[in-house]
Amino acid sequence: WTLRVVSYKNTKENIEKAKTMAKTIQDIAGHDAFIVNTGKEIFICVGEFEESGSAGLLTVQKKLNEFKYQNKRQFEGCYPIRMR
Image (cartoon, rainbow, N blue to C red; front, side, top):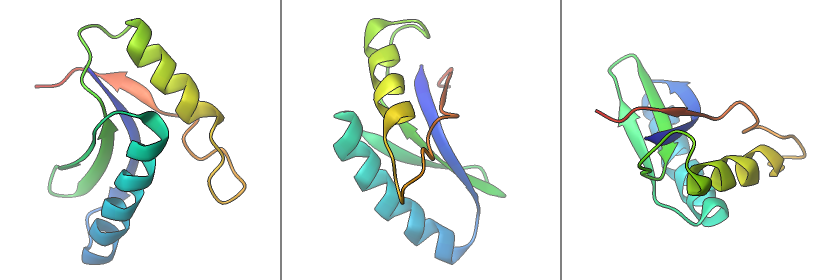
């Protein structure tokens, strides 16, 4: 399992933005952040967890939900997804 934090339309500009954002998110979360490119969209995901309800995942999700970026809670909608 991983946390899907944010998504962008797949453009050159957004790929660069996602790289910068992934670094910021990684620093906040204390777990690896990575970019998943599906073709039309890119997603920033955080961490690798055994279960969707694991304590580690829930702790990271809470940190991201509470973090303010540009004076807004922009990561409140992050949610666990199964990694394939």
